Image (cartoon, rainbow, N blue to C red; front, side):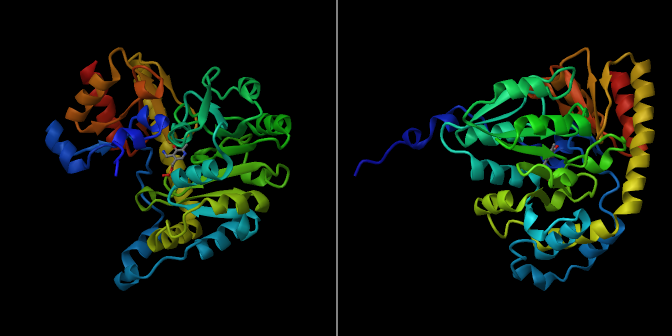
Length: 368
Ligand code: PMP
């Protein structure tokens, strides 16, 4: 029997793709960089953690329940989300983080020769999943840091299946207002699936910021992503969802892996929704104050910055971002380097509690 070499088994699009390397756990990083405490400002997490009611569910979890499979389709959570958004539970699909629902949508709609369209400087997982699944990712440059609607419409062809819009955009924090989003959806006229990723929806306080879910009635081809990782502070439990019209969600459900969302995540998410109002208010207050603080200090340091919507900001440094990363790590501050995200020598910083922001500003002052 001839055994093929590993190389022969690997599709060409996998051969040319580099695996993403996640950061090491805190204890390893502290050893590596010789720091005693570490502020993680690299992943846009909520420094306040989950809402108190969700924290209580976590403390009270009955351990023997770990032996029992979770609800395979997050039954009660879908009911709750449906009620909250005025949808039918069948219009919602819950996944192991919004990351997983990205893969569901791409698997459900793309086949060999198809393409997806998104921006060049946005959340990279849309692009990565398309590429390592063998599909073309057409990346349209941002225009003045904003998704370029005209540019994206020009790149559509007969093989374009999905258009991904990150609203507000990670990492620029810019957004399309309701009018611009509707105009774009009108131009698409149902011919492609349009995904609007609203991972940072709950942070935005702007009057003209659109709630994509409220547009589902008008646009049958629209799919909206939300997550419990950001505002709801449940990133470690991995839970997010998509909402769409019944026919579309029914197709996506065929490409979804059931039982990928654990019991604890489902219960914590349910309670997080019940207890969201005060939590959202406290988080927004913190963001407003700390963004102001950063604006003042970055201006004083003469560092160009991008501060818009969302719980993150970008700063341009007069040195390599990887060098800055290492130096800041030595001071117990972990940021995200952005050269790999096509913003050379920028870093992205998650807005966190004041002491973390002070540590960051002190760190920047020293390394400059
Ligand atoms: N979309 C965007 C825009 C994000 O920034 C992130 C996480 N950084 C995700 C989706 C994925 O979120 P989750 O933790 O739910 O997988």
